[in-house]
Image 1 (cartoon, rainbow, N blue to C red):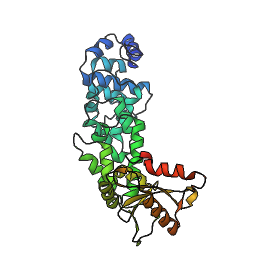
Image 2: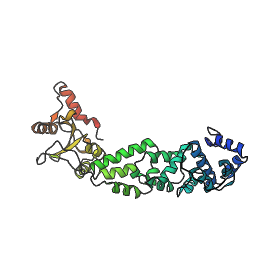
Image 3: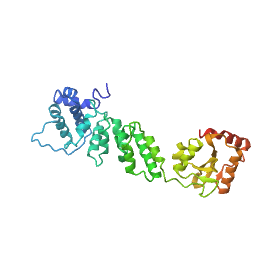
Image 4: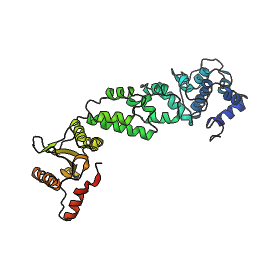
Length: 330
């Protein structure tokens, strides 16, 4: 048995109405889903003390209990909501036989139909059974991304807010990822598509990358300053660079190519103090020859790019680190 009784939060309200007009509980339990959900929605409006400026045309209006006991679904809804929004009875039918877990969920559903943006209601219509989880996700989603495809792939309000911020990041680094482009990409998702893959496709077209620490025009050390350059380098060196694109776009790392022999990884220093030579990588992350590493260091010294002062670490630590490569790019 659910918390609050057989019908959750609605149980106590139905018991009170049944005391007033006997037979209401039995009528509710045996009603078809459209009428049953109309009763729950009307009870929710009363439980939440919602004021919809209801105007009754009857000279001698029936009590709410009498309406619930004897009238049709639309009459029950009009008694509590006044004007019934188009589509509300249909969405209520999608809930099923039991009430939503919270009375306020019905008012959320009503708000989706009466607001200026109808994408929430359209997403619900296309997403099958309506649950409080879906309502929570829709409330948290940016209205621009409300669609059945996002609703079916996001599990919580917290995850929806994370998705909002992820899209904002994509739009900050990809000038072509307009609201229309992102919404269209969501609408065109196939059954096996996922939101992470969608975002990854948009990231791979980023064209607003941060300034690179390596200047253009050098014949030895070349900045990889576009997504195309980075993806080509990942394929050439057979490493995980394709999975570090977001770090590059956010300015967390920068990558250069040295004479076509290796990749050079840079990290930003705090307080805008420039960049630091972090590591050198060759194909398949094999150990980097010491001579090549030293040539990269010398080039960075010439360009004024900082590197770790290894004077206190001794050659043993330095050579160990170069030999093992720390296995970061496997």
